[in-house]
Length: 159
Image (cartoon, rainbow, N blue to C red; front, top):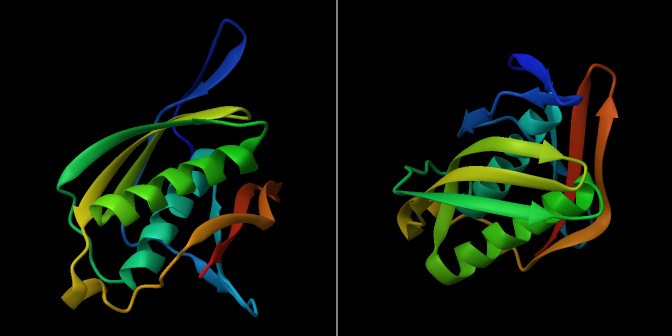
């Protein structure tokens, strides 16, 4: 459910959305890659679920406890580009620091940018060894669209 809304200087503003693991997502049946589809009542909720779906794929659905908090920002020509930029940043952090998203708060999202706070926890081979080896976040079949009364985001990962 969307948070309170207010209009300032003609701009519609929503309260931040924070979600914790686990969150619902679906695997896409794809011949050479892996992918996810997430839904939310608002674009912010759908984006937070997308971030957590990537974490869940990397963690093999194992539990993640937040140890650090990151502030992330991304820009792009549309919501798809913004979402993919955020996922690429998270994948880079996982590759370099072995940290996974445990929770995600979308502070701001519009058609050309986003600001997030992400609680991140350490990857543990005993808990997360079944996770996918995601190599890249692709534009192939990516979408971020309003569907009925909610929002749906789809992303394919190169594994």
